[in-house]
Length: 444
Image (cartoon, rainbow, N blue to C red; front, top):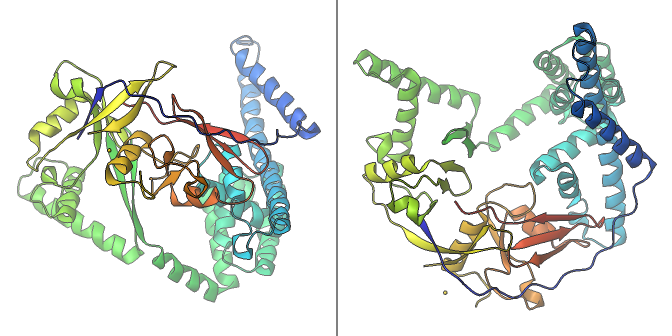
């Protein structure tokens, strides 16, 4: 448990600002797209003005055209992403980037532009490459709005393991199957069947590879819940579910008043943790809450499960009260920032590696990867001003990042620096000269 008290601590000196070229002026296509965006915004701003003047049939037509327009924009983005990737790869070769690293950082720049995580940026670029380079018929269907972006992504995913010639051949076959009249799952199934018939050996190898990728992930869900997901071979997943289902049926037969779903969930937790009851879990869970909310039952400021979700004050106090496992807490200190916020700056003390207390402080302050839009768990603690360039090992010069983010910043053309020590605002400048900023989330 992390209880936050407030103290006034001195600011650390600001890092040196890095210079970067200003991005080029928008080209004609960008200007045209911006004008279209402004016009669409005007339609939203004028909502209700034409109430009663437009028929319901016309509104359905508008909705259908908007859906087609959205699909067409996905096709345009795919073409732009592939052209950008080709240009950036050429530039990296010119700069002498190691052959094994050619292509690194390209999807990350796309992700920043799209305001999505680097992982999602990579997925989009992979789909775009297959679509633009090998599947012209499917790309045309997307560009005309005959099929949607999600359907396209599912189809491309089913053909991704095939060689380029086979993928191009199946693209032509799929174009004749009236994909526009199919639902997303039906279209995906049609692509999957064609892919298997075209190359059964490749399909088998794909299945073997998928089994090697088995894993367990944890994601936040609404209302203080979480999603614990196991990606398992199908027979193992079925066996796990059957065992939980059998436990639920046995408990219900014995008069258990919990629902079937509740019993299965509680049994899963109890068996994984080795506890007799799901409520008795004794593993460390980082929770940050204001000191007042910890001590005062009338203080309703929420707590935060680090990197996950907010928890109502009454709920976390009840969890602490009910915990049969040992519960401990340590203090964190905050100071006010110039814009009226708060920043975690110290914990309840200079080295190459961040010491345990400093690492803990940075993880509590940043919670998740500090790269904009990433949101991945913190894996590395990065010196913003590189240690090899004389950067100090301090909280101000440190940031929590994912493994990928820490490696990408070492590529030519990437710059990371602090632009405001008061709020610990960090700016990333990409090889194209675009600027992106991030700051730590507010403490609860």
